[in-house]
Image (cartoon, rainbow, N blue to C red; front, side, top):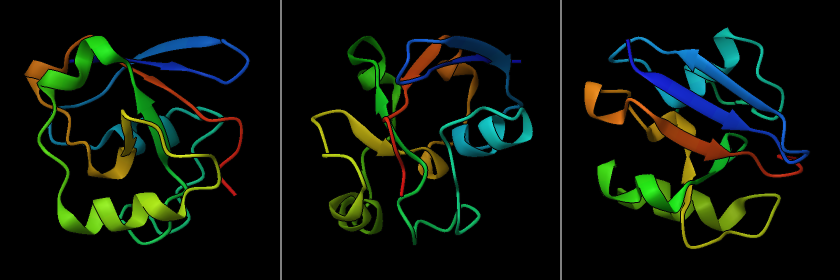
Length: 107
């Protein structure tokens, strides 16, 4: 099972096993990771699962789709170069070792 590392704004690190086919957001919510609100439940409609993907992992991700691109304009924290919505990041074996950094607020 791929391991995903979540780094809080306070630099607390949690690494968890996330099943293939699950989203990075669902992995966080299922494991009580603070910092992912996920108000819309994973439908790319609220931007409350915003994360900053570690630059070393960016090439492993699928490209941003138009709906995600649009929602990233509504994040509570300033969007950065490697911002993504964690609900749109489907976990695959290739994402084993992915690290995401959480913003200091989602709403």
